[in-house]
Image (tube, rainbow, N blue to C red; front, side):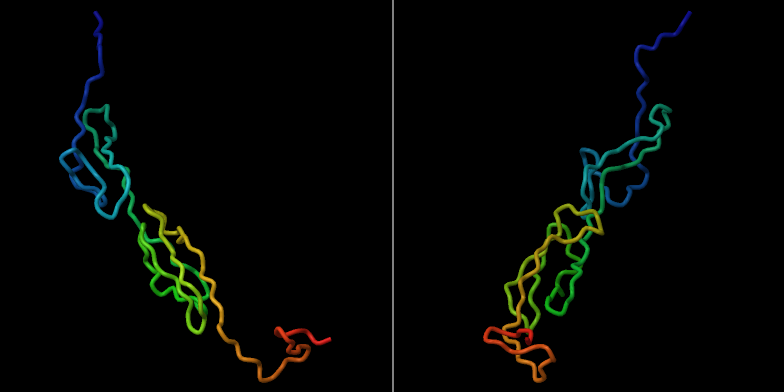
Length: 150
């Protein structure tokens, strides 16, 4: 005689004993906790052994983008540190420079701490630049600005 199995036995996969960081239990199962993004999935290691070890996967911590790395002589980026995903900050010209501010944005759903912010630097210019008191050798002041002496 031989034993014939028409279908595999089904085993129950329990919830984890301790809820891992980044996950929360809801009536329908599991979801990513606040500050995390993704799709929570419960899985079982050794699911065909009938003594499975449950674990959760699929949620990632939301992290701020990398701060803007620029020469801060002409730009004010003081409010652009720790900018979280989906948020933005204003990049301004630092006095005595003038120019219209621009916006730097951290991408929605960012989980990469090395990801730079999306931005375009403002066009900053000095409104007035005084003439030099001592003119360097080889230069002369022309009608439209400084020129090389001939």
